[in-house]
Length: 114
Length: 114
Image (cartoon, rainbow over all chains, first blue to last red; front, side):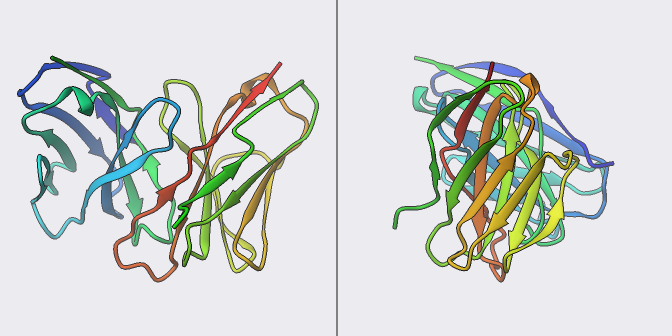
């Protein structure tokens, strides 16, 4: 029940296209769902996060869609750019992300081709 | 603002040795969490420190221990190193009362056990 399942494992998108990464969870006690971006040799950096009281959150080219009943959430990257090429991780945290552990998915390696 | 800093950047040890990794949290943050990221995997929660005490612990053996100092910096100690301990060790900091839930990650320490 502590797992977060992420797909696909890797993704190739043309420049200007839409990148979509999906995650699913089982534990209904999770209430904070962030997405992190990680470049080689760097630590993960927060991209965008959502709580279950909203179904969608948009920040620039990045959008999280959240389906509470299906226990699924996804990251959409609009107008994908070569600079977006990185590994993306979804995560979930039980009650209040600042004080609780993050449970990460296995990651998606995104390659945006010019 | 220097953000989360970790030292050393890289470390090579042999089986059976002991290692100490260090982390300085982002200014204003009082909670430090440690994660282990194996190659090609998502980060796995090791433990979290607040007010110099371990508040939460993930599924890691007692060989993994930590400490937090009065200035909120933290150490991760691993005893009796195994080959499987080779990984990127990430430190994340957050404010205990942070409303956003965001955890800021450092660049990590790459540990290689030979």
